[in-house]
Length: 230
Image (tube, rainbow, N blue to C red; front, side, top):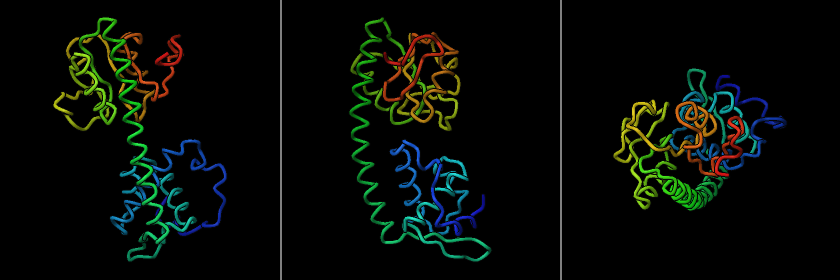
C-alpha cells in the first residue's frame, strides 16, 4: 500500500481495523512512535516508518489514516509524487500526553519486571540453578541481569535468534542457545514475541527449566504445564 493512500478515505469508519484491538498500550506506543517520527522528519516515507516502528506497511498506513482523521497529522503533496506529513497543534499535544503516559508506564513495567524476575530467580536458586541463560535482548533482560546479581546466579549469556548485536550489558549475545556454555535453566526475556520464543526455547531445553515472568502472558498448555509462572 503506497503513500498516496493516506490522502483518501479520511472519513471512513475504523470498523474491524487492528487499531480497535484491546492492546491499548501497544497502540499508544505505535502512535507515539509515528508522531515522533513525523515530528523529526516531515518527508519520512511510509516504508521507512514501517521499518522504524517494526510493523507491517499496511498497518502503518492504517495508523497514519487514523492520525489524519483525529487531526494529529496533516498531509501535503510533495515533489516526485510523494507526500509530506506535519504534526498539527493537536498532534503535538497528543505526543506530549503519550510521552507522559509512556514514562509512567515504564516505571510500572520496571517495578513489575523486577518483582517477577526476583521471585523466579529465587525459585530457580532453590531448585539448584547456578548458571542460567537469558532468551531475548531488551529491557526485560536488563532487569533480569540486575536481579541475578542479587541471587548470586551467573548469567552465562543471552540467546536471541533475531539479535543484530554480539554483546549486551557485557554479556555475549548468540543466535542459538547451543552456542552458550552449559546451563541449569533459562529465563525468558523476549517481550516482543514471548510465546514464539518460549516454544523455540522449549525445543532446546526441558520446559520445566524455563523461568517465565507472568507479565509475558505465555501459556505452557502445549506442553501440559499450564500457564507459565503458575
